[in-house]
Length: 517
Image 1 (spheres, rainbow, N blue to C red):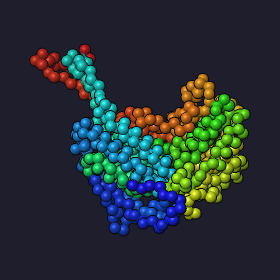
Image 2 (image 1 turned 180 degrees about the vertical axis):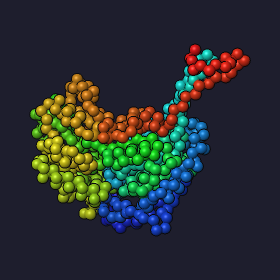
Image 3 (image 1 turned 90 degrees about the vertical axis):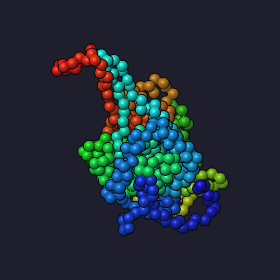
Image 4 (image 1 turned 45 degrees about the horizontal axis):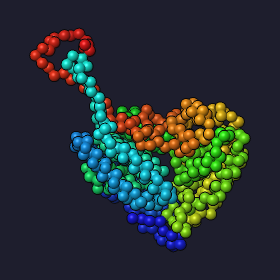
């Protein structure tokens, strides 16, 4: 098991690991001469792995393995499926520190945050353990004379999951446990930026007793995605990523006859009313804006403050930022880890820094500048510290674009109605929050705001596993959110059976339209 090391430990050159695919219950190395991409430790800038960039050949192999495994897994008793889910849950819980260390090494998030990600994924696994109850249908006796009608839900077949870099464990676990519990087989295409956790999950599924071929992993970039979207034996696609790619996935997948749920980008607003507890609001803004270096689809990036409390709130946020430590998430200093880690790649760090420069150029007031921060880590890490803008207007790029970094923008408004209109006018509708001590205002907000997930004095309103996760507007393409009962329904198809067991007094020939009497 990996553990954080003391900051005085000298760095050593890492061993570059060849990361395999996971197909048919075993690790499959890259084909000879196949292209690969480097995997880096964001806190050091050093290459730690090489991930194969698969394409049609690898996707075909994974889909073939999943197709071969489907009939047997579909016909496996629900109780047996649930036993595998329970075993997987126990293994994941027992070894969560191990996979958290993998997340920190490849994504850069601090260990505490990585453990939190695994814990939220565990909640979905626990929900999926109840699959016998979740798949219950309905039954009506004597719907017509001696005719019974009942409904059942059946698995789709081979399902594809395309997951992003920011949650290499939690997002796959939004989909994979429910898909498997419902009787499907899975091909996962993880991000090539931090792919090792997906193979680790494959090994854990095998140890839990999952039959070979039920869970498969193919690494790659756009060619692998396209191969999944176009493959005739893939029944559905679940995707999380940016809005332009989500739109492409939805349009391409549905054009090839697939069921698609494609969760896109976000620009999450936090509305602060003058009666709010400003200390609570400041804590929430810092936690939700800078946790995981802002690389969360549920991060708060626009702080909409109803005057006259903006100055007081900004002063509190600035003081809290001054107390944060940005550094290597795997290192301890005096037994304490960093608050915020690096960004995932050098290119992404530079892109976020470009947004900061653009905000300055467009006239926003830069209150705290995270560029050039002296991070507690290697000088070549992909560092950018917490950044705070004030007097941002809706036409500025720091407001209109999803930055996906530790940049918090304050937009000042005069009234609740002005703040609500600003939120509702935004093209994204993933998550939002209101901070107030007025129950009437909170109830009005939850009713009027055009956003899929709403927090009341809760800055990151990520629902529990038994509720669905998903946004509105450009944050979702498709009709189904992730997990909860919507997830169960996405991975199953309804079938209604009308049954009559004949007796000697059947009605004989009648060419009229069937009647329920």
